[in-house]
Length: 270
Image 1: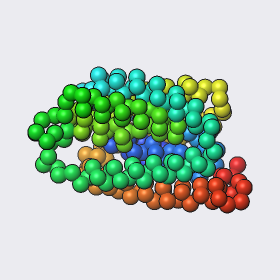
Image 2 (image 1 turned 135 degrees about the horizontal axis):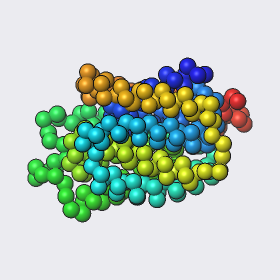
Image 3 (image 1 turned 90 degrees about the vertical axis):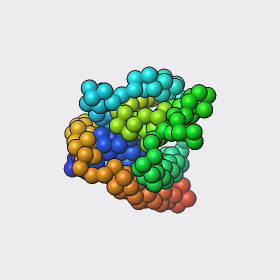
């Protein structure tokens, strides 16, 4: 079990460090199916793992000047507010339905990541039809809507939401990819902390799993930039998107058995 936690932590940390998101969406399935945690416990543990890892990875990006603090603040404030509602809904939803929602979210994330890699590399990120940055009300509305969605998902499913934040910063704010990655990590840190605070006292935290998982994820995040420097961003993104599709299929089947099969069949063994 410890080996699984360490391996998963490294993979998730690598994705966060290199892509500014994506890896956190695998944390809950690993905690549930590989490490035997209940879905609600897993989403709380995920907030700790993802939040601490994102903070660690964000430090290096901030030192390199790759964080847009104003955008991070807007996303963070709106995201924390929405995460409170997401956490409240989490406690009302059947565990297997929660996992089915997670599987659907992973498929959406995979499609979004595939779509991002299809963009022509010669096109300047964030350019509008007139060749300039999107601006004004349309850009502001994109940021607000994305921040609220990310915050709700952070509270509801225990994900960082970086796979939504990064494209929003590139398309709506016109940020370069390295800046979007660094800013996304700050946003993930803020929203994860807000959602975790809302859950304090509402359930137990499996610290024996969380600690080694988090330490491995931190190590992975520190190596993420080096991996990104050696492997093209397109190849890395597509490979991770394919992994998301595979994991989503597995989660959907297991959770489906829990919803429509014999009572308790889809729950992980304790």
